[in-house]
Image 1 (cartoon, rainbow, N blue to C red):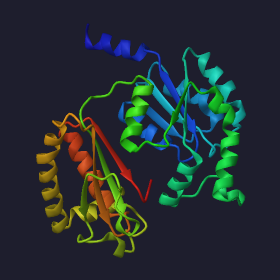
Image 2 (cartoon, helix red, strand yellow; image 1 turned 135 degrees about the horizontal axis):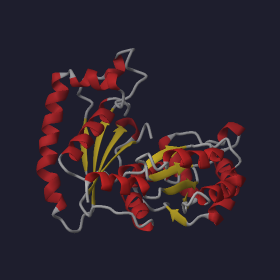
Image 3 (cartoon, rainbow, N blue to C red; image 1 turned 90 degrees about the vertical axis):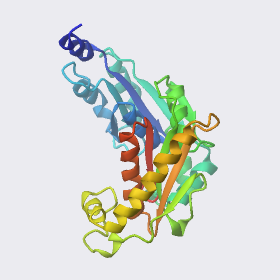
Image 4 (cartoon, rainbow, N blue to C red; image 1 turned 180 degrees about the horizontal axis):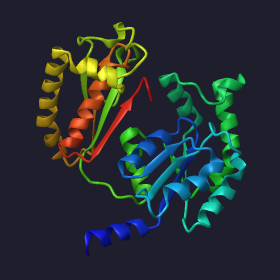
Length: 299
């Protein structure tokens, strides 16, 4: 078969669609990040009524995006009651969309919101958090009943959730060690599940630069600032050498399936985020296939 023939087969392959929904704080963002790592073209918070048009565009035979994942939840401005109608429209295009619902116990959702201090999408109605969760659960009840797969994330950490998503949906995954590079703020405590913790508070802090203060370690300006600091380069090189030496040895431990490497700084927005992203990029370049990032104070 010639390369041209292979391209033709790829182009003619039908697109697949995963529709991700569920409770706010239930793990949808982790799921979408996982799908993106597995080669899906992902869109979060797509207006539900645009679902058929999105599939028609992204899944067009002339495009390469053949695996699609869409997040639809309470932030949506469309009528969620019409989701079955729009899924049927997608089915009429020759696809078999799969609706995946992410759930968690109310107590777990309350704890997660307390830890992250994020606002629930319904608290703008003047509701207490517990009441907002109850209202959301009632509104999403029809979608939960319609779901092809329901994933309860109450007892799962980030690693376990990623693997649960992959196994539940029958997706391919390398059996190697799963790596999570996490950033956090020391003032809110060290992540309980961290295997390695590195303190970045001794490094130059972009927070004191008025231009960089509102940004994060994901932004190019902050990265450029930190990359220009000799102390940051020395720190990164030493941590990289340590992980390059010890992560392969941990992989040989058959009882371990994942490792969390955490970087902490004062606010958890600049230095720690930069380091987590930089080391994750390095790990991927070294051939690690299951690599994720999680920024506790941002995500």
